[in-house]
Length: 130
Image (cartoon, rainbow, N blue to C red):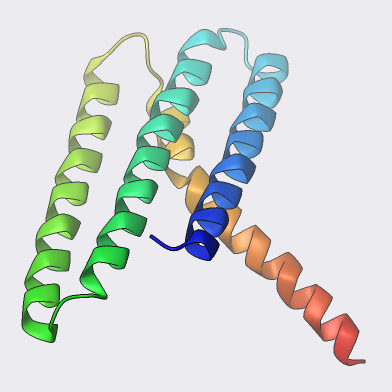
């Protein structure tokens, strides 16, 4: 993975941790029994961050392969990530200590961070053009 990609990935990961921290504080204030929700948020967030980093490594490696091999490789890695997400959600449903909605939020925290970051960057670039 090149330096610029690594910086981008770690920047998104840091912002995602901030989003999870804010969600933790909000749930601590708004929810009566916040422990399962907070544990769910962090459980989902940590797994999502690890799988996001693994996705970045997969893409970096696939770029160096020929088309057919890269397609098989990325499809296999996608399937593995999909299975891991399914297992995480199943564990969250079965566990009394984890809230499924907190886990889902944690899993989506990386995606939300990317969407918000792109939205902010898009707004900044539109302002510069005017």
